[in-house]
Image (tube, rainbow, N blue to C red; front, top):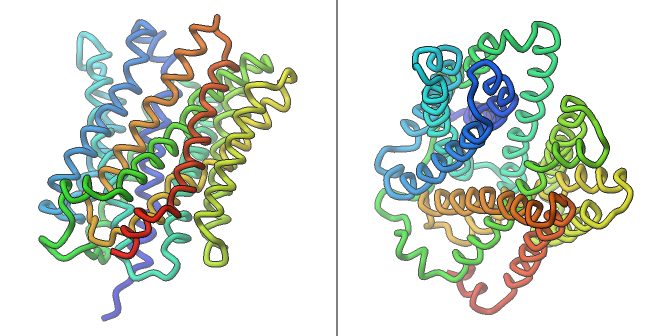
Length: 397
C-alpha cells in the first residue's frame, strides 16, 4: 500500500501549533498568576527562563539519544508531555502550598514536549519523499506562526467573553490539540533520515566548517527573531501608549502574522526562488527594520519596523535548516538537535542583550533595539561566507 505522507505532514503541522501553544499561552497569564497566587514578578520572570532552559537541555539530550529511542516514540512522548503540562496548569498549582512550584512543574513538563517537537518534527518532514523540501520546510514552520496568532487571538476573545477567571478551562481546551495529535503520530508513516549507525557523530560534525557556519546562522536567526518578538509588546505600549490588549495585538500578534506570511510565500513559491539570496534579502530587510525601530523619532515608523521585522525573520530558521541539511545528508538527528540548540541560545541571548542595554541606557528601548541590529547584520555576513572555498568543500562531500 502507498504510504500517506500527507498524514505525516498534517501531524507535523499540529506539532508546531502545539509548540506555539506551549510557548505563548502561559505568558498571557503572568499578571493573573501574580494577582491570584501572590507570586512576585521576579519569580514570574523565571517561568520563560525555565521553559527555554528545559528546551536547551532537551536539545542536548536529543543529539545523543533520539536515534536510539526512535522518531515515533520521541514525537508521541512530545505530544503526551505537552498535553499533560498544559492541562496540569489547571490543577497542579493548587495542590502545592507554593503555587509557583506547581506552575514550574507544568512548565518543565510541556517544555520537554516543546523541545522534542522542535528537534524531531523537522527531520521527520526532511525524511519524507517530498519535492522542493526547502519550500515544504518553510510552510511547515509557518504553522508555529499561525499557532502563535491563534493562541493570542482565541485567548483574548475567550477572556473577553468568559472572563480571565475561566483560564483553567482554556488551558484544558488547548491541551486537547496535542492529546489528539498522539493518534496522528502513532499511525502516520515515519521514515529515518539516515540508516541506523550511518549518521555523523557529534565529533564529526564539530570538525565540519559548514556545521559551525550553520551554528552562527541559527544563533543569529533565533536572536533576530526573538529580540524583536519579545520586546514588541513593550515597544508598542511605551512608544504609542496603547493598552496591554491593543499592544499585544498590534505588536507580537502582527509580528507573528507577517512572519507566517513570509514562510507561506516561500512555501508556495520557493521552487522558483534562490533560498540563499532570499535569506540575504531578508537579513538586509531585518537590519532596516531594527534601524527603523531604533532610530525613528516618530513612533509610527518604529511600529512599522517592528511589524515587518516578523516578515524579514520568517525564513531565517527554516531556511538555515534547508540550506544545511541537504549539504550534510549524514548529519542525522544530531545535526537538527544542535541547530535547534543554537537557535534557542540565540533566542535566549538576544532578548537578554536588548534588555540589558535598555536598562543601562536609562530604560531606552530604542538603544537596546539598535544593539539588536548586530544579529541580522552577522547573519548576512555568514550567508555571504557560503561562497568561500572551504564551505564548498563541505557541500561537495
